[in-house]
Structure formats: C-alpha cells, structure tokens
Image 1 (cartoon, rainbow, N blue to C red):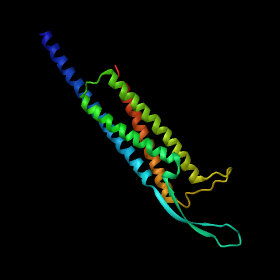
Image 2 (image 1 turned 60 degrees about the horizontal axis):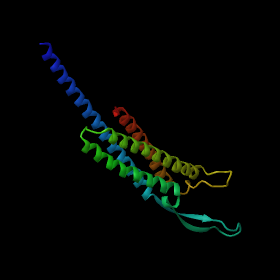
Image 3 (image 1 turned 120 degrees about the vertical axis):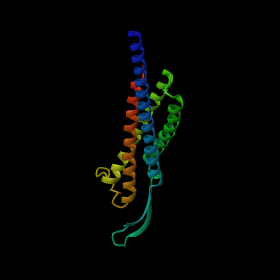
Image 4 (image 1 turned 60 degrees about the vertical axis):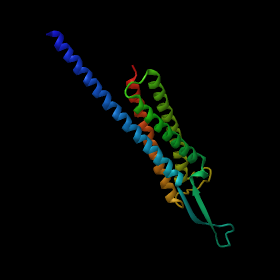
Length: 190
C-alpha cells in the first residue's frame, strides 16, 4: 500500500516538474522573441533615421547668410553605426538561440546551457556598451558642450534626434531583457 502511494507521488512530482520546465521554457522563448523584436526595431529605427534641413550659415557679418542643405544620418556618427551593428548582432544571435532552445526540447546539456549563458552575457555587454556610446553622442547633440564650443544640433534636426533617442531607449530595454535571460539561464544550471 505504501509502495503504491509513493509511486503515485513520484508520478505527480514528475508531472509537476515537467509543467514547471515547460512554463519556464515558454517564458524563455517569449523573452527571446521579445529581445529579437526589440533589437530588430532599434536597429531599423536608427538605420533609417535621416533628416535634411536648410541651415543658414553666416560667413561675414555684413553679408546675408548662405542657406545650405544639411543632412543628418546615423552613418555619419560612429557611435550610431556601432549601435546599429550591435543591435544587428544581438538580433542574429537571438534568432540562433531561439532555434537552439526550441530544438533542445528540455534536454540541454551543461555545455549547451553554458554556451547560451555566455552568449547572453556577451549580448548584455555589447548592448550596454552600444547604448552608452550612442546615448553619449545623443546627449551631446541635444545639449551641446559649451567648453569645446559644440552647439546643440537637435534644435535643427529634431526628428532625427527623436528617432535616435527612441532607438537608444529600445536598445536599453533589450539589454535588460538579455540580463533577465542570463538570470533565467543561471537558474537552470545544476
């Protein structure tokens, strides 16, 4: 009698463990899809950001200003290019990691878990560094720098600056999602 009840308990515990594993895997896949979408959107927004404005340039105080068409593009600033590339790399990695998680079907070896954990950590570092670089240039464009006589450019290129700010914010959110994935991966380690 005792043996039968123990067998029933073991079976129920195994079912409960499978449900927890399945829901945890579902959360992980959902978070990876979210990271994929966020990095893709951030790279796209900043990649297509472009604005052309006519800027008056005064060469000599006695002459009227010379109107020059000036364009602001993300490819003109290396920090923005770095942010676009970092988001593209994270997007590609996320697509690969989604396939790995789906194919593994809950039977991941310790090596595979460590590889995904290290990959997620690398994406956190990459996205945080690109957020910092692009954010610093964005702040310089928005506020200027009186000490080195750099003027504010967001007054002229407002749409471009807003697109860059949105992209940097989305990249920051994506890095937080990757950080949560690192925590989730670390909890799975034996």
